Image 1 (cartoon, rainbow, N blue to C red):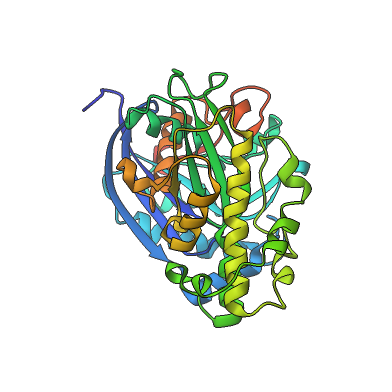
Image 2: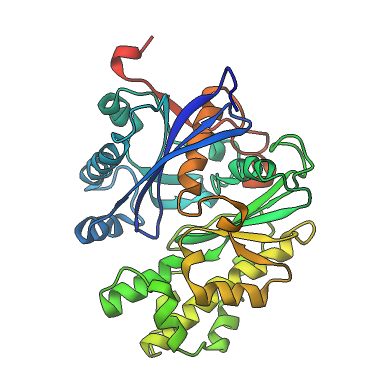
Length: 369
């Protein structure tokens, strides 16, 4: 399917779970997803991962941020240069700090640098305009989730659950015509997901993550700790709402007296319980929940979700979509919307006063007006 105003757009995403950079091409007119294209992945090295982790909680003007930004830009240029047919790039950058209550967010990396290096226009800084209009600045993938629901021809409300470093849920009513329409979307962060599990694995075992949920499956969940965690005020707040990776700094302390397997099982249960609690906010129970992000590859986490949620739960691949690349594809899609002046967030997704076109355009010098 072709449309005259369709664009081949390239999106990049690196999350707070610190696995690496995902990159994906899609063809879109900013409304429909017309075709999925090539994808690529660049893992962070152990040294790079440690360097990024040292930047968590820091802001743009803090010492060391210029060097970290250069590292992130260089790594992105490395993977994005593999795509020669991109007409536009959506660059999210690496989130280091997110403080929506005070209108601050920090995605490290400069889109103008990438525009110059790759000789391609880049849309970046997706969150600032949203926060200036009273929004949380996150999550931003929901408008793409709406397009995905249309693509798979969903007829009843459904939900997308992304389990990256932080979990976020998007409830979609596919009967609506536009994502910014009242009642089309509800989105919010559900709680911690892979980040604390990954941090535990690294600190105790020197491993990046709990592969296949193997360690968690050997342990016993401390149900008391799970219930205690769910008493945080955040879980009682109405959405839209969003989190920083480190908003629960005592989470690892809560499990520090547990054996490795029990601690991992408990953190996995906390991720599942937080996500399941989020369904209480949905206007109606979704017909099903499609899980994306690294968490869908954790059998224990998926089995807990199936037990705790009052609707079918399945990996996003069951809908014919790519769970590894969905967020990179989302920023490719959002980049086209920004270029065309279409909204990228609204009251139902981030709590903005009015639909907002987020993002800034960076042009290579030779293409500037």
